[in-house]
Length: 107
Image (cartoon, rainbow, N blue to C red):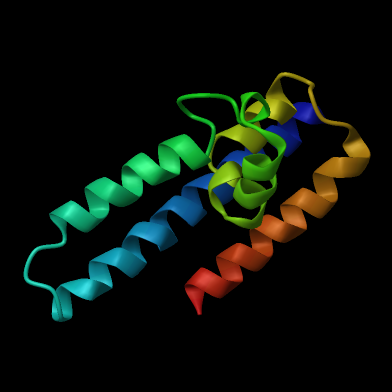
């Protein structure tokens, strides 16, 4: 069951990353070059998503700020499922939050 939930979280992560970068690419109508914006967003996503440093290593205030953003659902949340670091009761609410972010970015 955990492997299935990991697959669902991974699919959500892929869709969230696509929607985030698609939103930035839509700025190409107004900005001549979006490379700098995309590079900056990738760095922010890697730090705030737990790809470089796990989010549990950050101070409590930063953890709360990062939890409000969609970026933890890209790396940190799927890896917590895979490594069995999250309870089953916590997975569904987190997946709902990721779905809300997908709906928001998709809209």
